[in-house]
Length: 203
Length: 203
Image (tube, rainbow over all chains, first blue to last red):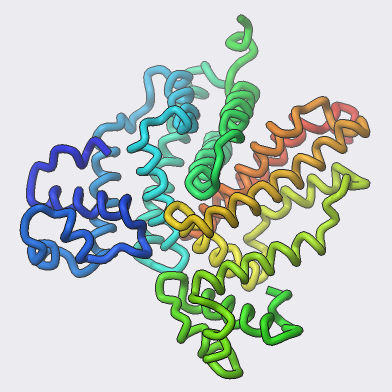
């Protein structure tokens, strides 16, 4: 991921090393030693700053979410249709560069810890709500501006966010992605029927 | 899960022990020793039959899928609308008994191993296709019988299966399930618009 490419501090260097080690070894085989191997300075520095791999990976997740938050305009979008299109285009993983695909796999793997690990569950509860809220704001703004139909923002956002979550989950855990173009197409049809006014549908 | 409640052989007793240990400890903290503790006979028998926890958990997954396959009529449903309703009702996890909720969490945790573990990925590629195919058959049959609109079975099934996968994934990894009723409602609206003929919509 871009944000790990130019670390600005020792802390960011350690987080970048943890991310690289996670992508290389996967969660189950990840150890502090392996993270240390990816870190170019002293391994003991990693131990000094973090209690263990989960502590470090959670810091990594927080760092990524915080960066995303700062980069993303979370206010009402000026063009709700374009913003919604951009949300749905997150499904176009097939054409995504390898580092983004690897990122999705790493995220899904960490989220797979959540059922039994409270700290991961707390994190993913927050990040899940953040992404659903973002979609909700887009729907809400579109309805208020009169560019969208009078849809229920919470319900519509819940559906769209669930489709995206399901697609990422399937994508990271099965071989083959033929189904992905179908889901993108159906999601487009769903948003058209649910959000776009008949006038907008006309060619 | 029901299928583990009345083991018919030593093999099934071991699989049931593995399932109980997985639910109790989670994947990351699961060891062959802990599985052995759940198994009432000799621990060495567990080692004798299985190479390690992944070997055993994969056997567990196969056993569950095989049981589901046998219990489920995979042919064309006699009542496609009722069959589709039953598929969508899988989302009603909130009202599910605790053992089903625990089962969903265990499955999501194991599937979280798939990004870095080829054997899990192979398994979930097969099970994912099995569930999507099942939905596809329902849509196809409904279209052929004239009870459904002329929808694209593969695309519609891909969408519905992705919504279900996303809902299970979110459910197992975040706190709170207020969003689930919304998604159930939106999925109902989606299937009505996509599959049900206007005549069927009339009260």
